[in-house]
Image (cartoon, rainbow, N blue to C red; front, side, top):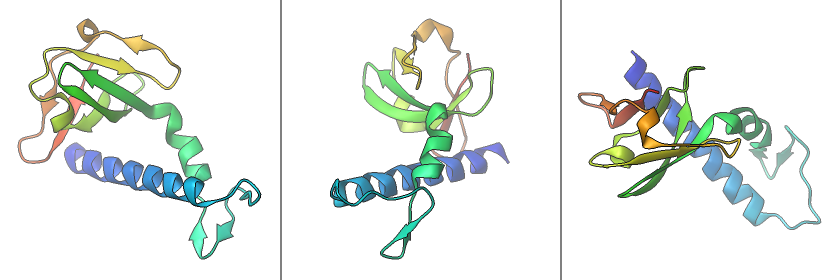
Length: 121
């Protein structure tokens, strides 16, 4: 049950960030949008993004980088498996700017059939 939830949350997070990025690049500074208001039939994503932003992390490995999000208060992170598969080192940057080293995580746990992965501290 947790793996499908991981996939859904990653999808929602990606969709929300993509929508926000598109919204902010398509507006001129003279057209501010109020939180929760609608412009041209689309809902502003700002309230959603501000809610989830503290949970979003940047994951850097020796193979590249990706994103993930905190799913537990103990620092457990969900991400896509391709972000950490085959990586010799994993570094995570939290929304606070704090950077954790690879020694703080157990080896990634991958789901058998879904492209999700969990990093446990």
